[in-house]
Image 1 (spheres, helix red, strand yellow):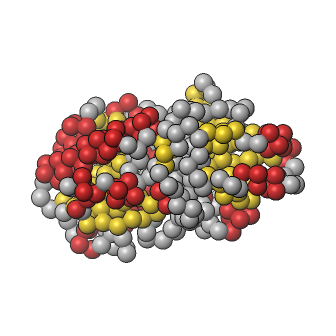
Image 2: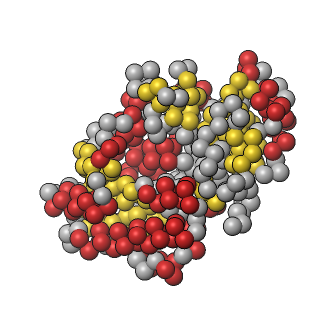
Image 3: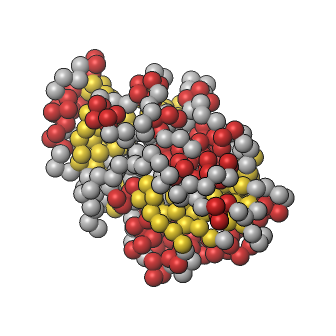
Length: 364
């Protein structure tokens, strides 16, 4: 696979994943969510983890439902990773405001894995309370049904990005449809639903046949939701990020960067460098050693170009490093001091078109 070398800046307007939920909950249309979509009795937002626009487009002729849907590409957030993007989708704000700025985030209590809410093997619910770490109320303070895997109910990340929602756990994809349908028939005007298996398949197998077969399953799942739900329901389908196949192109960051930093955060396609003893003189220049495969940007550039949105809270800023190394080519860049999931075949997190463009599809 050839990855385009164009760096995609996330939108801070209506063509961002963060603009969907506010439009639906306030019933105020924007350039993405139309008045016609909002005129339905109820709206379902179905988020498919790892389903990029370019992946759908590549297999469009084999996806009779998704391939024929009315839709367009929109941008996810930076970094293009699950914890960050799902939080933006559910809160309606960009990462600079909600503060979940990556997969692994630097905190005074340690490096927080935002999906597991752990630091190393330690559960961090008490050290880093999710409601304090991510203070923006999801769903604008409303309490819609949230249909997601049952085992996620008590997780820290669920508290961070889904709290106040009425949790409706599903145990199989078939019962995901059942839960959506039951909530609609009980009178819910808005239902949020989430499916994660496509992302898992891509991580393990890459973007070949296994990914296509799972994508075909998602296509059939969407078709079944459309068929099962009551009349006059709008189904909106989007994703948190796309994917890039990396394979075995996994490299450690340069020894000089290890010497100059106390730690790194983020993930292998969007890596933050944290300067040792706050001495970041020359760190940006030293990081240019990876400019053959990555975009290298200092914190001033990141903030000036609004990678995390036009507003960045002091808390979010403190969680960022001094230099970001953002993979441009299909590679993974690891910190040898803290290797993470080295065997993932497909990855995400960077700002390539393949990772940043996600679908916005509507069915009514």
